[in-house]
Image (cartoon, rainbow, N blue to C red; front, side, top):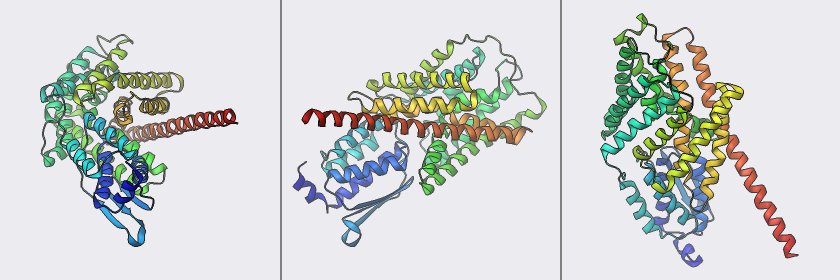
Amino acid sequence: MTEPANEQLADHPELRQFLLGIAEGMTAASESVDTIYGQLERTAKAYGLTDTEFMVLPTAILAQTNGPSGGRVGIRSRDIGSFHFDQIAVLYTLLNEAERGEVDPVNGLKRLAAIRQLKPRFGWLVRTLGHAVLAMGLSLLLVPTVDGAVLAFTLGLIIGCSKLVRSPSLQFILPTVSAFVCSLVVFELAQHLSLGDPLRLLIAPLAIYLPGAALTSATVELASGQMIAGASRLVSGLVQLGLLVFGILAAGVVVGVGTADYSAIERSYVFPWWVAAIGVALYAIGIYFHMSIPARNFGWVLVVLFVAFAAQSFGAALAGPSLSGFIGAAVMTPVVLFVGTLPNGASPQITFLPAFWLLVPGASGLIGLTEAATGDTGLREFGTALNTVLSIALGVLVGTALFQFVTTSVSDFIARRSDMRGR
């Protein structure tokens, strides 16, 4: 787009709405407010807007163009829900074009509307089976027993079917109902089968509901000074975690967990250690079908998942479980950002979120909150849960800072070498 066209667009309301739509789409893609703000600034500059102000919150975006005296303000304050990965891939293609000023705002608004209406590539049956495979893969990492893997697959099918419900009012209580049903089944079977730790086994089918990403994003935003966004995301994540815990506790009351020992029990049919790699692969396949990962990005997702798993395993062996999340996140984040810079790479959110869920930052929180309400060690476990979330958030911050430092240093080095050659 030429410069005169950019100047001509500066006063058009369509451009303001386009910027708001971009922020809205990035919010649906689970981006942090700092990332959204940076994207808006780069896009506004590409269209010739030099005097702009943006305010980005998780559920509201304000954009002011042409300065405070003669400018106009646009606002968007509705929630469009979360995007699946196919939508995120198309969105980031549009964002890259918008950064270069190559998209007409009116056409951009039409493309954003089409992205919101984009359906998953796979039908409901494939997506449901994908969730079951996802749960089974995670169970091989958390509770590697034959009975646990079969049960996780079965419960994954049930929850996968429940996630097909589109009613907003029912979706709000769906995590609680799902946790109640899963806990009821697990607590009953735990009295007869060698399932391992029942609370840990529940994480596999319920993982998609765990607000680990929300809690860690909240911590990152609080650390960067975005107090309103960080605090609201933190409260939202804790409420979601509380809903899951309520479902587990309700099932415990019905079954009567106080009358039985539900601590970790001796496992039968234990898998060898290398099956964990199969668990990661199954988890990746399940995510691919359940979240509609673009086929061209699946290889990158698999690479990032194995990097995150290997780094977390190394961290657990080196420094113990309390720091394994930090090391996994610190190593995984630069890889995610590097893949995003490659010409044929994948958008950061597409590779980041599956790896993030693999680290299971919310799992310790779910177990800790539940034990806080049912046992004497609850406060200690809850403190460990918060430490896990904070360590992963710090790992993301360290990994991002490390990547930015390296890329900036390399760019400066190349620029200096070019100057020396020019002389």
